[in-house]
Length: 185
Length: 72
Image 1 (cartoon, rainbow over the protein chains, first blue to last red):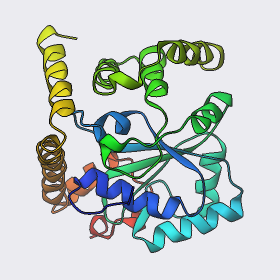
Image 2: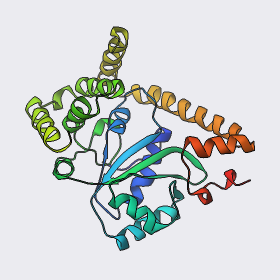
Image 3: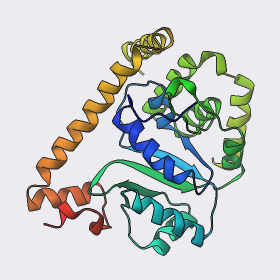
């Protein structure tokens, strides 16, 4: 599957631009609302959540430098060490294109064995038309139904269950929900 | 979830499944119109000092150097 940059909505183009830089530096997965929205769910959003593997400060500085070169800015700070501290403290860092805060990428480090499992079960979703890595459909449904639980999340889960009917694995969803209870609740 | 909203989600999911060549244009127009409207509002707010302050607060912008139009 080739990465396409034409015939995409603004959110998808923004995400592809960011990931074209990010993927050269670190393993990533797009998670949560963007999985549903890029799969066709019709709702608004201002951010795209992405989880990355842990990297050290030197490697982060290289990533940050390339993001700046590509036209992105970090909303919280211009200081690489300060931004890295946010990441290390499991706080999301937010990037947008220079001089315009919407949409934004919320980037965070993996934090536990549940996130590690998200990386191990990551998948590409041809329906989206995007050649990027997503956390699995089953994973997103479990998170939205067991942990996040807002009305938007429940609707996202409902939509994912319908549009990816063939991918739904209830045993896998239950297994992830148990992990969520063990590690996040 | 309201019943009508569930119905709408179900109908749209089915449309996406059945119309692989049609849904993306409709969906892209929807997503683009929301983001374009946000940009229009942003461009209006940025014209005034009070508006610029609101943007900084709304988006919790601490790296002001990344937003030259907010530094006027």
